[in-house]
Figure 1 (cartoon, rainbow, N blue to C red):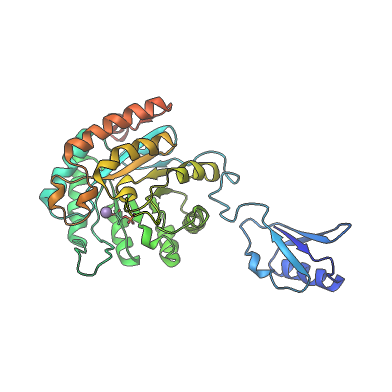
Figure 2 (figure 1 turned 45 degrees about the horizontal axis):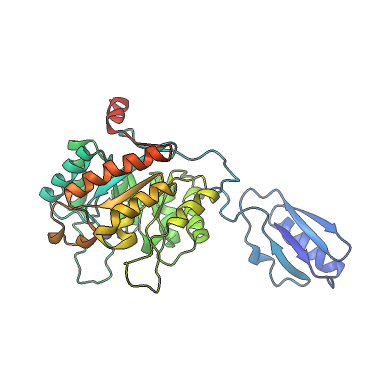
Length: 349
Ligand code: PEP
Ligand code: MN
């Protein structure tokens, strides 16, 4: 960070800023110029809070030299992060990964039926919420612990990895024992204490973008997790709020392309929540992969009209299978390949 002093700054103002930098444990490098002095900070491994300097006498502005989301930035690490799961699935790198399943786990019958066709279609990760963040307290809140048991059974039978959402620290601990990836939902993207806790649990994390979050805020949320020592974060674009009611959210495919220029973390798209409309899932899933996403997460249900949550944005089983074939073609067209479940079995056995 560079601290630019005002033209009228006095030597004691410069001295004070240098002292603050030193008290923070870093070295100050004042650079007197023709008009004003700039002070460089040397030795900080993590990003600094610029607000510490705002308002000090004689300080005009601070200029960030590196991104505030330091460890997740591409300038920090050029090599793209690849998250590896126990069933052999990799997220990031060349592969394109498909995650599918219902919005909520509703019953053993529903989830096992879904897991069966999701695996047969070529997906390698099963989604399904056991703890559900619902806008209304009267809506289905999920099966909780019972849902986790059903998910574990599906994982055992079909070899699929599991992703499921944690709402708080207690559910996060339980999910870490059962699932392969802990999902942090859009509503919790800036629940900083939860992010720290998840970082310490050490399990891969799927971090959804908040419905009104900038890409920078999203990356700073990821930074919280990585800063706790957990490098395995997967970003998920799931649509942001807009003035236009034609879709539930605006699925921001540009954010996928933009984030790829800013971070080494894998990024996937969620066209189910991104659009809220079943008929838009296929085109937007294709768009996500074409835009550079490392995969998609899509809601699907054996009988969407009977779903207890998000049926309108869940694919029918045959539509899910068709989507996987379509995405295989898109992946090929952009020089990538679908993560192959058979290769995984070979790798993990
Ligand atoms: C979900 O995945 O079912 C969900 C609640 O997603 P989001 O946090 O993106 O709304
Ligand atoms: Mn949902």
